[in-house]
Amino acid sequence: MISRRRLITGVILALTPLGATASAQEYKAQQRTNLPRIVVFSLSSPPDHVRAFEEGLRALGYTPGTTIAVDHRSAEGRAATLPALAREVVALHPRIIVAIGTTAAIAAQQATKDLPIVAVTGDIVAAGLVGNLARPEGNVTGLSFFAGDLMLKRFDLLMELAPQIRRLAVLFQSPLTPATTKALPALRTAAGKRGVEVRDVPIVRVEDVKVAFAKLRGSTVDGLLLQQSAMLDARAEEIGRLAAEHRLIAMLPWKEYMQTGGLVAYSPDILALWRRAATYVDRILRGAKPGDLPIEQPTRFELVINLKTAKALGLTIPQTLLLQADRVIE
Image (cartoon, rainbow, N blue to C red; front, side, top):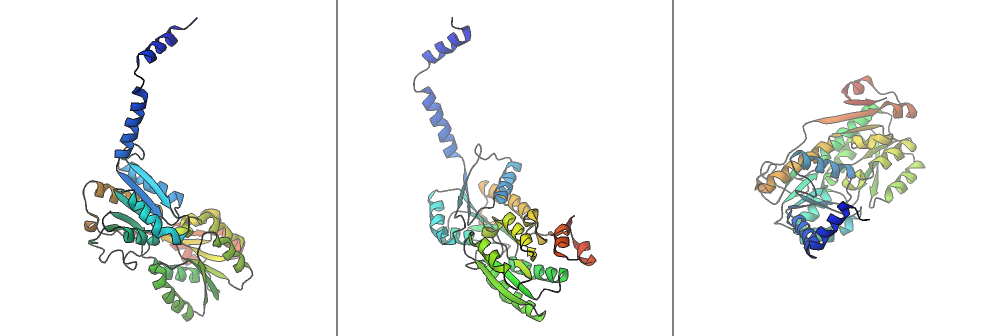
């Protein structure tokens, strides 16, 4: 016997035109195509940064996949592929490109002078992306945290924590970003005044991270300063763990590096910056021109200290530094 419900369902299906289901699917596909498209473009996308950006969109009333289309294009740590990937992104004709990091922002700007670009970078002026913070005037706007100045501040804090350091490894992305190019000579000068020798450790590919730490194991280096970059940030947990495993007195760029045993980090709240980037997207979608939107800079910085790691390293954190800390991990 056939149930009444199944019989009714069968009659409805029999009376439905054959093309109706296909038309509905085509309509939904067309709806998705007509959504404003945002492409998040990066050298190596840290997942938490992307999540923070999408959280910012949701807080403004957008729903990725429903009211706005958000695509992701990453070079997976291969800097040489960024220019070609940037051209592919431009060929997608997005409404806005959101660039993670300086190298991605530079590649995007070289690929288009017309599409709006919202960038979160280390030093947006040193990179040549804008000439004026108050009125960028071109097709790039966004947020900048002046990475060069941060490197010197991090060095001072590291030396306050461990004044016994005499050989400091500086790990950074290669090729150098404009901010790092500017900061390294200043760092060497500051280190020289304290009798500290600086050893450069360039990282060309994300796969080089483990090799670099393996080389540091057998060296006479007793301190580590990591310069932030999108490529290295994508390996934050791995780098924090390796620094702890190799017993390095390490100053790390962000608190995200501390989750796996990092010693100390000093930075603006990078996830807050990414949530804030969504407001630029919103304003541009509402008709604002990127050249009219001032570059924002962080006003609050966080110092995080891991006492468990300090104890494992045999370090006593100075009371003056503990009083400055925004968060202490015990």
